[in-house]
Amino acid sequence: MSPSHDFGIWVAALLTLCVFSFLYRDNPFYKFAEHLFVGVSAGYYIVLNFWTVIVTNLYDPLHTMFVKHQAPFAAQLGDYRAWLFVPGALGVLLFTRLFGKIGWLSRWALATIIGAYAGLKTTGFAQGDLVAQVQASLQPLWTGQIGSSLNAILFTIGLITSLLFFFFSREQKGALGAASRVGIGFLMVSFGAGYGYTVMSRISLLIGRFQFLLHDWLGMK
Amino acid sequence: MLAWLQKVDRRWIFLWMGLLVLEPLLFPVGFPIRVTRPAQMFADAVASIPDGSTVLMSCDYDPASRPELVPMHKTALRQLWDKHCKVVVTCLWPGGSGIVDETIREVHDEPAYRNLKYGVDWVNLGYKAGNEAVMVLMGQGVAGAFPVDYYNHSTSDYQALPIMRNVRDYSSFPMLVNISAGYPGTKEWVQQVNSRFHLPMVSGCTAVSTPEYYPYLQAGQLRGLLGGMAGAAEYELARKEKLGPATRGMDAQSLAHLFVALCIVLGNIVQRRRTPGSGA
Image (cartoon, rainbow over all chains, first blue to last red; front, side, top):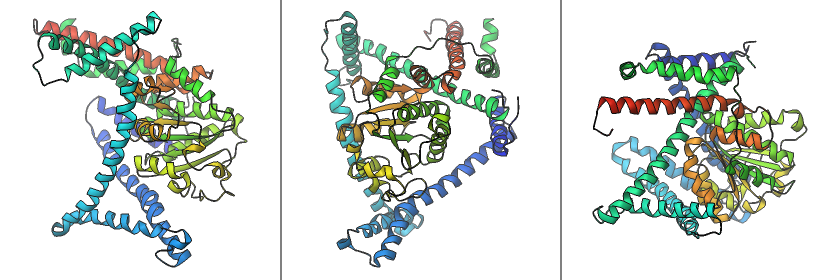
C-alpha cells in the first residue's frame, strides 16, 4: 500500500468521504462538500460555456471576419459569418427578462429556440422512432424455429396488450380489461428490468468511488 | 426477527452494502461472466469495420458516468487502434471534453499505442454546444461544425491535422461508435444521424438508459449495445482483455444485486405481515 502523493487526489478522496458521511446523518462535512460542489460546478460551467460557446462560436468567427476581410459581409469571398450577428442578438435578447418592461423581447429568442428544436425533434422522432419501430414490430410469428417463433409471439402479445392498456376511449372491462391486465404484466416486467438496470448504474458509481479510494488514493493494487 | 426487520435502521443496510461492495474489490471472488448477444454484436460490428478506416466516435458523457463508460470507451479505442483505424472524437456534453481527452491519453500511453500520433491517428474535436443541431450540422460538414479541435488547431489546417483531409461529412465514416450517458446521446444519434444519413452505429451507454435503447437494437438501428458496467465487462471479455476495470468491478456488482434482491424480498414479507389482507 502506497498512498498517493498527489494533492488533487487527496482533495478528491477527502471530499468523497465527506459526501459518504451523509449516509450516517446530515453533518457539517457533508454540507461543506455539497456547497463546494454546487459553487465549483456553477463556476466551471459558466467559464466552460463562455470559452467553448461564446468565444469559439461567436467572438472568434466575427473577429476573424473583421480582421481578415475588414467588412461585415464578404460573401464574394465565401464568408457568411456576419450572419452570426443574428443569433448573437437573439442571445442578448434572452437577457431582457432581467428588465421588466422590455422582458417580452426575450420571447423572440425563445420562440426561435423552441421552433428550431421542435422541428428537429419531430422529424428525428418520426424517422428514427415511429417509422422504424413500427416497421420492426411487424414480424412473422412463425420463423421456422420454435425458439424465435415463441419470442415473436410473446413480443406481439406484449406489444398489443400494452397498447390496449393505454386505450382509454372505452371502459376497461370484459375482453379489453383482460387484455389490458396482461399488458400491465408486460409493463411490470419492463419496469422491473428498468429498476434492475438503475440499481446497476448506481452501484457502479459506488464501485467507481471505492476503486478510486483503494487504488488511486491508498495505492492498493 | 420480523420485529427487528420492521424497525431496522437503514444505516445498517448502507453498511452492509458498503461491505459487500468493498470485500470483492479487496478479495476478488471471480463470479463467471458470460458475453451476451448485444455485447458480442458490438465487438463484431467494430471488428467488421475495414482496417485503416476513419471512424467517428462521439463520447457524450461527463465525469459522473466515469465508472460505467470509461472502461468501454478504452476497450473500443483499443479495438479500433488495433485495426489501424483513425478516430475522430467529438463530445456533446459540456463537462465531458476533459475526461474524454484524459481517457484517450491513458490508452495512448499504453505500450502498444505509444507510437500513434495526434492529428494523424486520432483527433479530439472537443465539445460543441447545440445537441441535435450539431449532429445535423455535421452532416453538412464536420469541419464546419467543429472549426477548431480541443487544442485549438484549425480543422481546416491539414498540416496540423492530416486526419481531417479525409473527413468531409458522415459519408467519410463507415461507422459511428457512440459512448452515451443520456441526453444528448444514443437516442439523438439514432434519430438524427442513423435514420437520416444511414450511418451504421453501435452504442455503449449507462445501465440506466439501456432499456430505452433495446428497441433500437431489435430494430437493427444499433449494430451492438453495451449496457453499463456489465456490458463493459462483457466487452472486455469478448476482447480477451484480462482483468479490465469493469471486469474487476463485476464481483461487487453481483453481490450488491443479490443484496438488493434480498432486501426487496424481506421488505415485501415484512410489509405483508404488517398489513394482512391489504395485498401490499
